[in-house]
Length: 341
Ligand code: ASP
Image (cartoon, rainbow, N blue to C red):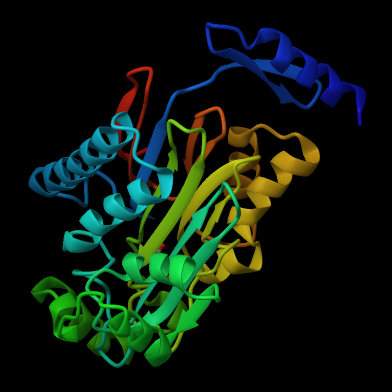
């Protein structure tokens, strides 16, 4: 063990008294941190929104939706609810809200259909579940949870995933339930523009939802749910349902949920890479997130962001776009809701 790590561990041990104060190793310089009783962060997607291209009304409706979701998470965590349960409940609420590109309000494939992806991971034992390309299941995150809890697998796709979910009693809806008037209109507009624009000029609507949690028992969990990217090919799989790319949680390091141009997040295995930087290099959470999202990912052309928290309850929300719908809270009373930089 490197001397700096040993030194930091001794400090963690020495400084954790009744005050709950601890120290996190930051390379060779320990940074003081407070051990939070619980903490939560949520996102509703990253993109190029700014106050000039969003009406005040629209900004207010997103802020209200984020606040409502955060309030649910806080209430559950204060009651001592388990991290996985909190992640699932929070994401279900966002899936039911058509403002977000997950569940109802999902973006459409090039064929004009909704194909949904979701994943969930428990930091305590690294158990996880994911589904991709599913239809007719009202809350895709419940299908991911089902795969984690009830199957011997980690990842189910398409028809197989949908029928597994239905066999186990998850709520069925017509696939049109997911398609809102606004999404249909922008799909039709894009369909027309598609013939005039080059592939790279096509606007890509994003807006995945995600949640990361530290619960009162000291466990971490992460989850992500999405309709993917507007005009994606039928069958395309993004980062959101891929454990290690869009979602990751390990009690020993951190919990991460990503949003953005999925192909880049897959190439960089972003969610796992944050955990690996903490585990193998002792990089503090926020530094790891900035290195990746503002540095390496941006340099290769990947736009987006992530929400994350470590086992102390330190929260980091980093994005290289102009905005990310996001909110966070912890047991010390910190509350934050934001959209723009
Ligand atoms: N990451 C998602 C995907 O590529 C999209 C998003 O986050 O907006 O499917």
